[in-house]
Every structure is written in structure tokens, then in C-alpha cells.
Amino acid sequence: MKGKTVAERVRGGGRWPTRSGMEHLERCAWVLRGTLVRSAVRKYLPWALAASMLAGSLLKELSPLPESYLSNKRNVLNVYFVKVAWAWTFCLLLPFIALTNYHLTGKAGLVLRRLSTLLVGTAIWYVCTAIFSNIEHYTGSCYQSPALEGERKEHQSKQQCHGEGGFWHGFDISGHSFLLTFCALMIVEEMAVLHEVKTDRNHCLHAAITTLVVALGFLTFIWVWMFLCTAVYFHNLSQKVFGTLFGLLGWYGTYGCWYLKSFSPGLPPQSSSLNLKQDTYKK
Image (cartoon, rainbow, N blue to C red; front, side, top):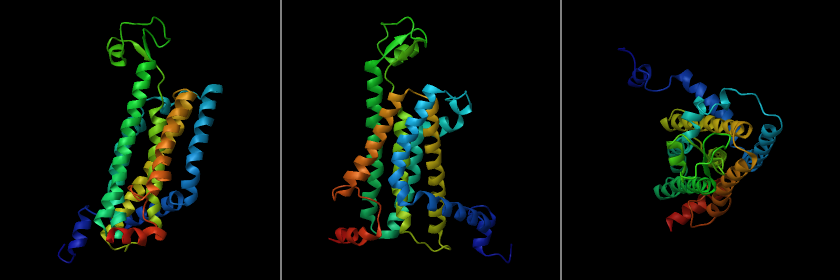
């Protein structure tokens, strides 16, 4: 240990990735950047999600797939990822947006403005899930069995119904279809900033951004994969159509319309608008 530098001792203690570990991360990040950061992905992913939802739903109705691990609602990806999809998306986008936007602009005010996209996303998630819950409540009834036999009119809410061992049946808009659509599209939109980000490989910022790119990339693939699983295993066609539509509207209403306006969180910094945004903040 006597001849080692402080950095080498820290690296040897496992606090930072080793050189080979960092190289593996960089390779993964390079592949993910080449896949997700393309403008074609941002352009066609919404259409691909809508088409795959329709195709998966038709497959479920016409030729259902056999039961599998992924058709069980208690599978690991559903319990530990999809059920808390917005929390995962929020927690990874927060440092990613902060680091990349500050690296490009050096403006704390602009970074805070861009971070408000997460507050907008949280509001969209909360409002939409509340709407879905109310629709299911007002269109539902309590039954004695999943076959909808023996209606229990004395139970007027889903909570009461389940508490007494009943089965609540209403129009259950697919929250998975909504949230996975919205989260995947939001991540892809925010990762567009990587076109502009250039960092020194020896700088700690490079390691942090590379790690976040890999994490966000894998998270996006999980969201798309579980969206497909939802399409072929769960809900009926109309419930998934409405869920996906809400997700698409949440994305387009923000990144496609509102964020183009001056009084908004704005889009990720791009070379064509970076100087203009900086000048605006100087004024």
C-alpha cells in the first residue's frame, strides 16, 4: 500500500468502479446512446407503442398465450419496478437532468426550471391515476365471485367490497399502459441532451453521467418490455387503449406542445437553442 496513490487506494477499496468496470459501463452507455438518443426513436416510439398495444391486445383476444411467469402479477419486474415506475423514473432523471443541464449551461436557474419537468410529471401521474380510480369506482359493482355472480349492493366501494371478500368489477383503465408509455417517452426525450454532452473521461462527472445513461437505458427497456407484457396478458382492449392514450397525451401535451412555449420547463438544451436560452436567462 505504501507505493499507491490515494486514488488507487480508494479504487482498490471498492468505492469507485475499476478501470475495467468503467470500460464495461462505457460500452453499455455507447450502445444505449446509439439506440435511444436517435431522433428517429423519439419520432417513432409513440407509434410503436400504440401499434404493439393493439397487436398484443388482438393476440390476447384471438389466440391467448399460455400462462407464464410474466403473466403472474407477482413477478419480480412487476412488483419491484412497474408498481413504482414513476419513483424509479423520477429518482434517475433527477440527477441526470441536473448534471447534464448544468454541465451544458452552467445556469442554476435553468437547471431548476428544467427539473420542474419532474414536478409536472408527478402531477400528471397523480391526476391520471386519480381519474382512473374514480372511473372504476363509479362504473363498478361488488360481486361474490370473479364470474360476476351474486351482486352485493350493500358494498358501495372497492375497499369495502374487497374487505368483505368480494370482487369489484368496473371499467379499470390500464394504469400500467398509461404510466409505462409516459415514463418511456419522457426518458427518451430527456436523453436527447446527450447529443450535446461532452465530458473528460478522467473526470468524475463522466463516470456519473455514464452510470445514469446505463441505468436509464435499461429502465427504458424494462418499461417497454412490461408494456408489451401488459398488452398480451392483462386488461381488455378498450382499457389498454384508454391507458395508452392518456400516456401519449401526457407526453405530447408537455414535450410536443407546452414545453415549446417560453413559460414552461422547456425542452432539453440543444445546440440550436442553447445560446438563446442562456441569453434569455442573462436578461
